[in-house]
Length: 444
Image (cartoon, rainbow, N blue to C red):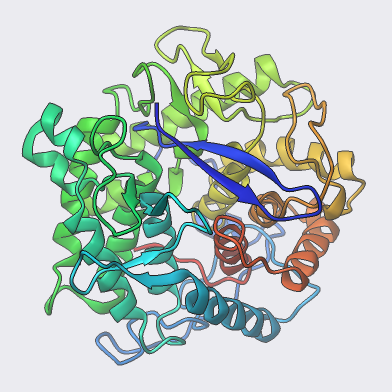
């Protein structure tokens, strides 16, 4: 069992545990880009151009080269105001979060908060690589940062997975590094965390579009290597993700459907379309059977090999009693699903997010500061001791799917823009959804 524990700031700090589970396409979306653009959605920005190979990159921040096909945007700030907020937040994030890795020449890492035990986790590498590739054009050092993070990723493979799966596992990262940047040798002596490797693979595909693969790292090939390793090691043949301690358990925040679509396009492998469909089947089942009145999604699902997958009863992933709640992992789902919907227009993920966001909006009365730290699937709140910034940030992505959430979306944006965190996890889960909401998210 792999667990990453961090302390969240606030008036009543508490420890959360996040499991490091190993654990376009996706069928008929039900809406075409042409239809989506006329169904009441707000198209994000106007197409502009930037030359491939320019100093800014092929897709500089703020250019909005590919307008969204569906969804809405905040109306409480203009695109310029949103971009200004994001630029400032990114600069502050980079200044305090990026550190050199003592034992990796040229290696960089996203520092894991104030932990006295270890330097970084692969999840942080994924977030950092996404932010770097997205902020090229604003940050002249974005590629240097990206390459430094990638250098660490490749220098610290998941050694434990290599023992079981062979050389292919070297394209997956050890999920946690010691303070000096050496492998953790903890648990399975270097196992991977699926969420980190999924984001790393997606960021590599985006880097290929942003900077090309002709000089230095071959981003595209590195992406393909990681995608294949993920398929062979972290996925089941039916498209389900694997978890611990059984491959028939999984973590819902690993259902990164937008990434799966990008992998299908990059590889030509329809398996990743199957993964999109399977993720929806599992989420739809959980919402319908276990959360019909709330649409809430648990951190972990068990028994995915049966006809009745169910929320975890606890102590199989994080090693906590709250694994069957909408909590420290599943809070990321609205952001992931909304990020996909604005680019794909897939009605299924609008439906999934609408159910969840509608409940949260009603529960807090439209006031983001009243969102609970977590919820049981029947809607019972865990506690409301302080505003959960990561949850609020990710809810921005969830609210993008429907005009019915416009006022709530505006409140989520305003709160987040005025309450930017300095802490690991919170800060990344504010920045990335804000980039999506501003119209600056894109696919490779």
